[in-house]
Length: 200
Image (cartoon, rainbow, N blue to C red; front, side, top):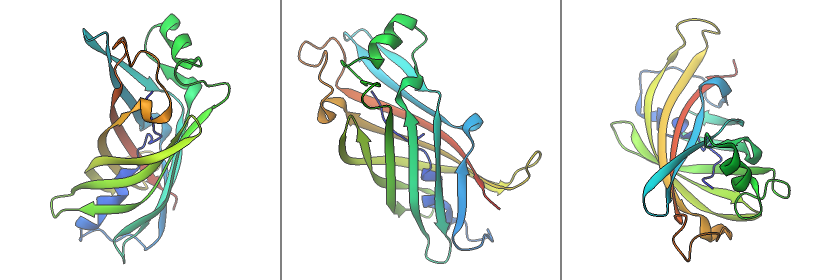
């Protein structure tokens, strides 16, 4: 349903790092998403009564940050569609079917991006493309950089922490089940939380 692929869509963090002039990273550093601290979730309306929350448990990706030019490039996020989890086994089976994600034919969805609009307070947008069900369409995420600093324990490498949100119409990707009769909402709200770790 939601997709991103990041996400974990996800990944948006780097686009706003340039607002923190005091940081001293090398230009072109590569960052890899930390799967244990990356969440790509979604909310979708069920028959108009309430929104169902789901998430994808298998998200991977990386990105490149160029401090000198305040740009991010080579953002590539992959979400395994069969990793969807809505806390209901029967519903998850349906979401994996041809009515929704069609995971046998489309085992992955991907998000790629390289453009950014950032303000002085660390808020901005990441404009990219989401490939879902064999179709690719533009997708914009609102992003906020929560923290950019050396990790206090464990790997102790420089880490970016980002929150992002966005919205898509699943019918745009040919996922039309339940739209006409309003059984399942067409609009999908995305909720993305990411930690990305410098590769060096």
